[in-house]
Structures are given as C-alpha cells and as structure tokens.
Image 1 (cartoon, rainbow, N blue to C red):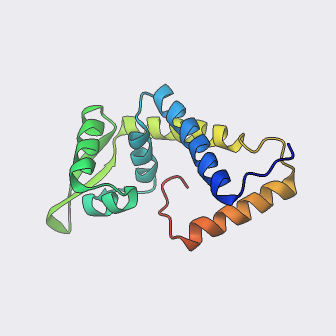
Image 2 (cartoon, rainbow, N blue to C red):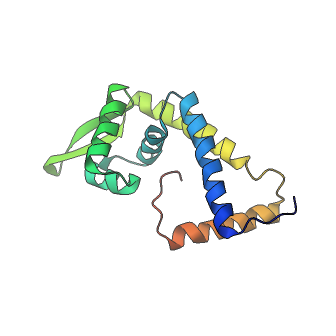
Image 3 (cartoon, rainbow, N blue to C red):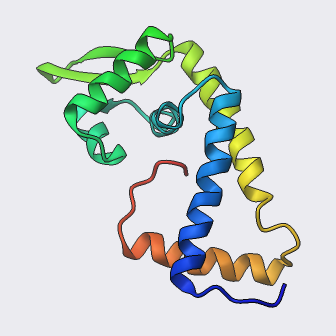
Length: 144
C-alpha cells in the first residue's frame, strides 16, 4: 500500500476499525460495547459510581442503567462502601470475572492482529506514537 490518508482521516478511520473489532468481540461474548468497557475497567479493581462514570465518560443516569443491566445479567455486583455509608462500589461478580477475562483476551488478540505485516520496528514506532497521543491527552485506562 502506497497511499497516505493524512493524520486526521487515518486516526478517525482507525478508531472506526478498532470500534468495529471491539463491538464484534463484545457481541460474540453476549455483551454490548459499553458492557465490555465496564468489565474491562472493573478487572483492575472495584470503582465507586462517580469514579466509574468519569472513567467511562458517562452521565449518572446512563451509568446507572449500564450497571443495572450488567447486574441483572450477573456480570457485576454493587457493594456498600465501607468508608462511606452512602457510597456504592461496583465490582465484577464471579461470572463477570470469567466473561471479562475471555472477552479481554480475545479482543486483545483481534486488535493485535490489526497491524499484521508490520515488522518489529514499525510496531514499536506505532506503539510510541499512539502512546504519546493517549498519554498527552490523559485518556483514561479502559483497556490496559
């Protein structure tokens, strides 16, 4: 391939590509893309609702609906915050841990295949440039 798209079109189109891979993987695991994001975030640790909303970029009502649906599907559980009587933490259920682990591994495998044909130096360059973009713009960790 010899053509160049330009930075903006290339980033936008690559975002569509990654989102499509992510959505397909989520569907195959019986999840919505947002549920997949929620599970991946919660793999690290439980979160309070406010903190979770900030990481996922969701308004309180949208987050509540997402957590409600995920709880009904047995993926997450709400727990009282031991340090705050009014606070609630959301964590993965046992089933959620299993689904998150398989979803995460499969999605990582698929995304890792996107730059197939890149040699080691090209992959390192891509990693460096994309890492700078993400870190410079303080993008929250959703998919470590």
